[in-house]
Image (cartoon, rainbow, N blue to C red; front, top):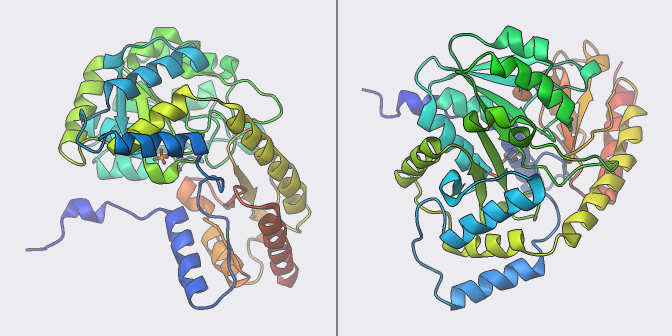
Length: 394
Ligand SMILES: Cc1ncc(COP(=O)(O)O)c(C=O)c1O
C-alpha cells in the first residue's frame, strides 16, 4: 500500500515558487541571481496597518474568531465592495480566508465533482488549474491571442463551454499578461454566459488597484448583475496593501456557496489569523493615497522595462494595462542554441543570473513572465543580463 495519497500526487509546486526557490538555493551557493519570479509588491505594509495589528494584539485579539471572518472584517469588506466597486452585498455574502488563494481553494473544493470542467483562459495564474486538478476537476485551458491582448472573446468562450462546465475563471488585471477587461468586453462574455445557466463565474480582482494609464476598473458582478447570483468576486489584501505575508483574502458570492466554503475552511485551517483580520479592517477602512502612490511607481517601472525587453533580439512584449507582470514572447529564441521550449529559456536565463517562471505553466508558450515588482536597479541589471544571454545565442 502506497504511503502517499493519489491526491498528494495532484498537488504541484508552482513554476513561480520553483523559480524563486531555485534562486534562493543558487544565492545560498554564492551565485548572484536576480529573482523576478515572485508575485509580490516589494513595498512594506503601510505603517497604520502595522500599528492597528499591534494595538489589536494588546487588546487581546489573539484568539480564535468565527471561521470565515470577524463581523468587523466582514463589515469592512461589505463597505469596500460598495464604496469601490458599487457591489451591494450583506455580511452573509462575504467570506475571508488565509489569502485569496485559500478562498479560491475553498470555492473549488466546495463545488467540483470528479470530471467537472473549469474554463481557464490561457495564460492565467497557475493556481487555477492546479487547484482544479487537486479538487478532481478538469482544467480546460482556452488559448487567447496576443492580438486580443490575451483576453477571452465571446466566441472562444462559447466554444469552450460543455455540459460539464461548472466555472469560468476571469482575472482582471491578469497575472501573468496584465490584460484588463473593459465593461464592454465583460458584457460580451456575459451574453454567452446568460445562455449557459450552469456555468458559474469566479472574478479574481486581486490586482484591482494596479491599473495603468488612468484606466477604470470593471467589476464583473456589477457589469453583469443578471449573473451576480452565480458569480464569486475574489479579492485580497496581498497586492493592494503589500500584505502577502499576513495571508488575508476575501470573496463575495451567493449565500449557499459562501456557507459551504466556510465548511471547507472549518476542516482545514479555521479562521484566518485574528491579528491579520484586525490589520485588514484598518487597511480596508483606511486611507488609499499610499496605494495610489505605489500604483504610480509600478507604472514607472512598467514604462522602464517594456522598451528594454523589446530591444532584446528575439523577444517581444506588449505593455501590460495592469498588474505588475510582463508576459514576454521568446518565440524568436526557439531552435537557437539548445532552446526548444520556454522551460529551456528559463533554465538558460537562470545560468545568466535571472530567475523567471516559464509560460508553459501559465498555459501559453513560448513565453516567460517578468515581475516588475522590483527596484529599477534590479530591473535594469536583469535586462542587461537577458540581453547578454540573447547575444550569445547562435
Ligand atoms: C491572480 C491572483 N489571484 C490570487 C492570488 C492570491 O493571492 P493571496 O493568496 O496572497 O491573496 C494571486 C497571487 O499571486 C494572484 O496572482
